[in-house]
Structure formats: structure tokens, C-alpha cells
Length: 615
Image: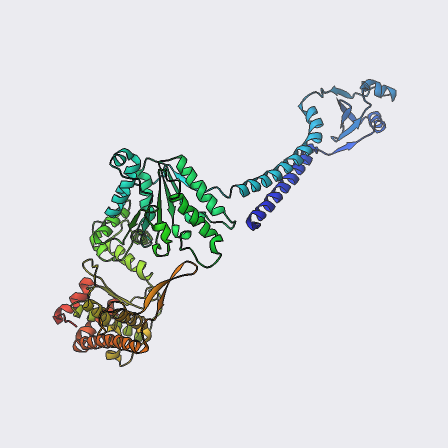
């Protein structure tokens, strides 16, 4: 197939060469053209001008006669080859001395003489030769590129300007320990071989996006004193059949020559998906590339000291042959950071930033559960940008806390026009969420309540746990359901009507209630899950759900889901009705101030002496 981009490039280069050719020709014509206007005279006309006394000076340059006239004009004439100038004019009966005409003889053996001979002769051929050389050079480059498709584009890590090591990676203690062993094996293989240990074939880094897989790989490159080749898996596959497999062979051949060495393949799921997609069969280019990787990592040729490190955030779609021991011996999982790791990451990303003395990174870490390392880096950058935009010299605590909400929900939309009635409805809606959360023993504490629109949300209630939780109890799920319905109940109890602002709350609550029944076994149906998930291999692995229960059971599931939602509704309604004064106080404060922080919110509730209730 022809590459349209390459074709357009050749056209552009041909046009450029043509422009150069025309420009050189134009310059050449200007070079030869005299800057002064001259008139050509025959010898007879020149003799007549001499007899009339109009000629002042004659410059003889070879066979060329340059004439200066008395009126300041220039003229040019020619004499016969080899004839003497005095004899020429004597034949015409003219004595130049009597006519007071100055004669000057110039030596024509100088640079201008040779340029006058060589340039008109050679320059056109040089220009034409350069034009053809340019065209053949481009054509040759295209041919060479066609034959270099099978070469890998792997880059050798030598020294980055921002070189990092394991000390620059916060948290991930177990991950760094696993990779330190690999680096140590390559540095000091003797102590491992003496005890009978074998070098691991590969290590695959698995985890959600932004958890630091590529960052850890760069740290490995910084720690290792061995060649480190890195390449993206998407660079293997081209539109030409067999190119991917050829590049894999070339990559491993290069790494073997430099052994002991490390090969890092980023986003390996681009070529490592489950085989048998049903599209192209075994001749599919991606599958051919994967097959070659499998053979190179653990085929007949096992005497190699090349370790493959790969990264992916989709380990569920990788081919099982790729993950077996002997190929990727170590599966290293990178989880989202906990509160202590988030604090360490924030300290790393706050280096080089002017933080004010009131900044408490621990408090920021509390407010960012579920944030990855990339999210935290983005958070600190957003805080720095906001501070610079406000012409602040340092980044304060409030700016960082506001940036958290900007990262989660989007920027504030204070300029959005809103009716007073809508503002009041939004205030009571968010007050309902916050009041129910503050009233339930198993709900997370409220960190902030706001009716300022952010992103697609008209308002929001931010509630976060004080401690990291790996497990969640049934009562905590029920509390979340009641809090989700708090805004709906508050609108209904206050205005006798409901708005569309509760649509997303109802969607999330319904989905959570169904999960409690079908996945967690927390309903009256007992310890059983419903809806079997299985892998369907088509265009890679996909997850599909299969209905593995009867229609009668489906009715019971719907009934249990409805019961959970009704229980949450009744709990929220009981709290809202019994604590209307507190609801009104929160809503009025929101209408007045638009935003309530943790201390302000619980300060409003303190006079009401609310006691937490259990569901």
C-alpha cells in the first residue's frame, strides 16, 4: 500500500527543488546583467562618434571595447580577434591621440575573466545535476525506509535530564523490593547463581492508570548499571504483514548482544491481548507479533540474560500464555496509594513549589481517597496554577483544598445565572444530604457542603472517611443509600415537590442497592450472587453478564432492591422531619455563604445537639 504522507512529502520536496532551480537561474541572470544601461555600437558607429568628439575613453578588454561618452553614457563595441586597437582605428583613418581619446588596456586573465567563461558554461549543468541528485536522494531514502520496517525503534536509556531512582518513588515498598531484586541479580549474578537461583524471565507491572508503572520502570533504568531498552507495544505493529514479528526479533537480538540487559515494553496489552479473536485467525498481524514475543521470552533459546519488564492496566485481557511462569515470572500489582503513601507523594510533588506555612499535606491526603499518583501530581499543579493566576506569592491550604474539588468535579461556574428559587431548592437539597450524613452513625463525616455549580453538578456534599477502609459493612452501605436519598426527601418535605436535581442520586442509589443483592449477598435472598460473568473472546477479551436465574428469582431480586431503597427513604425521611430546624439552619447558611467547610457545618449543628442514629 502507498503511504499518502510519504507521497505528499516527495511532492513538497520536488516543488522545493524546482523553486531552488528557478531562484538560482534568476540570480544567475542578475549576476551577469550589468547594473548600468549600455548601448552596443559597431566599429563604424564608434568611429563616427570619435570624429564628432563624443568619445572620452576606450577600455580594451580582450576583443571587447568599453566606451565612455562625453555625456556620461556607456557603450560597448567589438574588434576583430587578435587585431591591435591602434591598427583598427588607423584603417578607419582615425588618430586617437589627435582626437584626445584615452586608451586603457585591461588584463583579462583575472577572476572575472574566468568567471565570465566558466559560469555561463558550468552553472546550468550544476543546477540540473543538483536537481537530479535531490530527487534520487529522496527516492533512495524511501527505498531504505521500506527495507528498515523490520527494525525495532527501541530506545536505549542512557541518561535523562530528570533521571530518577527508587528513592524518588514514594510508597510502593513491595513493588520496589521486587524490582530491586531483579536489578541486583543483573548487577551481582554470582551470589544468586552460587545458591542455584535462576534469573527471572520477566516482571509485569499491573495496576490502575496513574499508579506509577512507567515511573517505576524509569526508576529501574536509573538504578541498573546495565543497558535498558524501552519501547511501546504499539510501535511493533504496522500495516505491513510480518513487520511486528520482525521488530520483536530485532529488539531481542539487540538486547541479547548487550546482555545482561533489561527490555521495557509499555502498554503491552496493545499486542498481548487474548488470541483467537475470530478476526484474521492465526495470520492476524497482532497475533503474529504476540507469538514472536512468546517464543523470544521462553522458546528453545533459553541461554540469555535479558529480563523483560512490561506494564499494563488491563491484565484481564492478556493472553494466558504470556502470563505463565517462565515468561512473566513475577506479577507486580500497583494499588492506589493509601493515606500515608498519598502524603509522601504530595511531599514529592510539592518540591520546587512555594508552599505557605499553613499547608498541612496530611489534611490534603485525608481529602483525596482514591487519588492515584498522577492525580496528586495534577492536584499540586492545579494549585500552583490557581495561585499564580490570583497573583499569590505562595500556595496556601485553601487553594489546595479548592483544587481537589476542581480535579474531581471541574471548575467553579460562579458566573452561571441562577434564579433565587433554584438556589433555595439547591440549598435545601444539599442540606438534606449533609444532615442525613451527620445524623447516621455509620456514615462518613461531612467535609464540605456547597451550592456553587461545578462541572455538571449544581451543588455537592463532600463526605470522606477519617481512616482508610479496605472493607465495607452492610450498615455503611445502608447509610450511603440514606445519604443519597437525603436531597430527594429534603425537597419533598420542604417544598411538597421534587426537582430533576435528584436524578443522579437516584441512579447511584439504585445501582448500589442492586449490587447489595446480586453481588454482595446482603439481602434476604441469602449468601448467593446473581448474574454470571464470563469472558467472550471477540476483538480481545470482553466481560459479559449472563442471566443465570429464573424469572421468579428476578422478581424477588427487584423486590429486595426496592426494599433497600424504601428503607433508605424512610430513614432519610425520619431524620429530615424530626430535625427540620437544623435543616433550615444549614440551608439558610448555604444561601447566605454558598459554601460551608467542615468546621462551619458542625458549628451550625452544635446548638441542636444531634445524636447519631443507627439504621
